[in-house]
Every structure is written in structure tokens, then in C-alpha cells.
Image: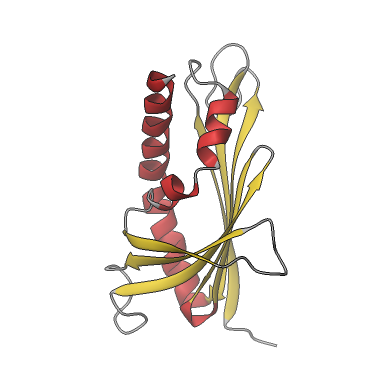
Length: 169
């Protein structure tokens, strides 16, 4: 049977500076306010009550300004629910947006070995982002394109935040 829904997956890796400890990176990944604001289309957010089915997760209503969506799909301002769960090595996000869009994202701080994922000699640490987008075919393509266009900037802002944290210590 033909389905209008589909799934897209993305995988992005950014090496962390050797001067940054993995603990500092994980602590910053657990700073939900900071992470939510990495979105280049961010407008605002507010905390929501915890869900009885996921008491460890923190819930937020996030408002974004979406100026690149196909005409008529969404207003220019979109509100969606984000559920964020701290993990031992990072964070897991579950986003539920209008039109049945569901996006699952993990950001983790993982150890790499020499020559792996952009590392030079010796071991290092990387920020690893894995994304799964589920929605109708048109929307998945649009959201995937936005994720591909935005991840480098979001990772760069994360690294800048890490460097700022290191300077404060």
C-alpha cells in the first residue's frame, strides 16, 4: 500500500577541541535553555508540566519563525512540543510538531580514535548528532533540508558555548 509518510535520517559529527573535557560537553548538553536557543529560527520557549508517562523528560513549548517552508504548510510562526531527556553521554529530544511531524534527535559526546570522524593523531571526543524525521513526504524533505542547512551553525554555537564555559572555570 502506498503511504504518504516517510522517514529520513541524518548523522552529523563535530570534533571537540582537545582542551574541552567530555564532562564539560555533557554538562552543556544538559543545559536545555542553551540547546533550545541554538536553533537559528528560535523565537521563544516555555516549560510545560512533566508527562506522567515520561517523568524523567522535561517538556517545552518552543516557538520558531519558519520562513523557508512551502507556502501554506505552516504559518511563519510555528509552535511545537519538545521533550528533552538527559542521557549519561548527552541528550535525547523528541519533537512533536503540527502536521504530524515527529523528530527524534540525540546529541552525544563520544570518544573517537585516531583517524576517525575528523580526529588527527590519538584519541579525542566528538559531538555526534543523530536525527530521525517522520512525516509526510513533502514535509520530511523540507525539514531534512533545514536540518542539513543548520547543523554546522548549531554545532559551532555549541562549541563557542563550550569555550565560554571553559573560560569561566
